[in-house]
Every structure is written in C-alpha cells, then in structure tokens.
Length: 153
Image 1 (cartoon, rainbow, N blue to C red):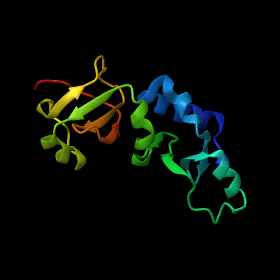
Image 2 (spheres, one colour):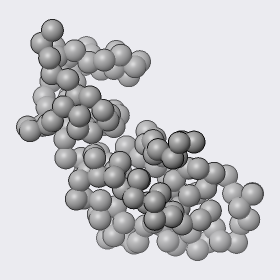
Image 3 (cartoon, rainbow, N blue to C red):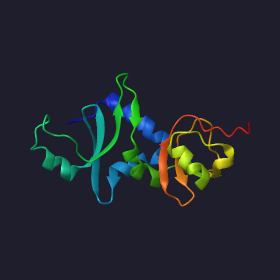
Image 4 (cartoon, rainbow, N blue to C red):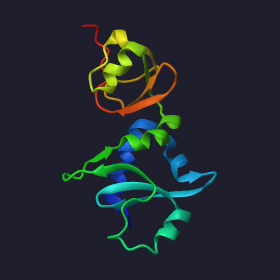
C-alpha cells in the first residue's frame, strides 16, 4: 500500500472531477476526519487516516483490501471507476439522470437507455459529460461516463 504518484493522482482526480467537479475537496477533508487515497495492486482505495495508521502493522503481501475501492488503473494507465465509489460520488454529482422504472432493469443489464426511458435530466448536461444515473426513487444506480445522447432517432 503506497500513496499515489503525482501522475496517478492527476489521472484519478481528472476522472472523479468529471462527475463531481469542484466538490472533490469535500471527499478528502470530511467533517468526520481526514481521508486519503492509497494504491494497492493497481487499485485505488479511499481510506480514513485512522484506519491507515492501524493497517501499517500489516505487511503488504498479506493485505487484501483496505477502505473502499474507488477504482483501478488499467495496464495503459487509465483510471476506471468501480461501482463501490458510487456511494461517495452520488451526493456530490453535478449532472444527474433519472430513468423510469421500465427502463431501469434494462439499464442494469447493460443496455442503453432510450429517450423514452428518461424521467429527468439535470439542466445543461453536455453530451460527453460524466453523469450519475438514478432511479426515479432517487437511488443511485451507476456512474456513467462517455456519451449522454439525447437524439430522438
């Protein structure tokens, strides 16, 4: 378990900022303590400093996981968010999309959401913006990057 390098931190923060923007600082400086990001086996973990100090007694090869896995670095050094980061990203998300109950199951199985399946969408959401997808009951379902297409055909 080691701190992220400057390049790794930049790549990861760019990806997270795509979803939560300036609220990135709120992830690190929380009212319940200071949290940090650590790298272990190409995975980035979000962990409180109290737990990090306790884990210092465990050797790196015996340590399986620590804190919440935010994502991982691919072999090409791109950062991919994991679904476990959703609970931390959703409250601070800048752009949100709500999908109707009929389209919810289809989306969770990996299909695209048609325009008829959209319930609401945050104003000024650009096409390639990272969004957090919610059910109509305000339950976060997935962070979705890439293309948010609102074409009618």
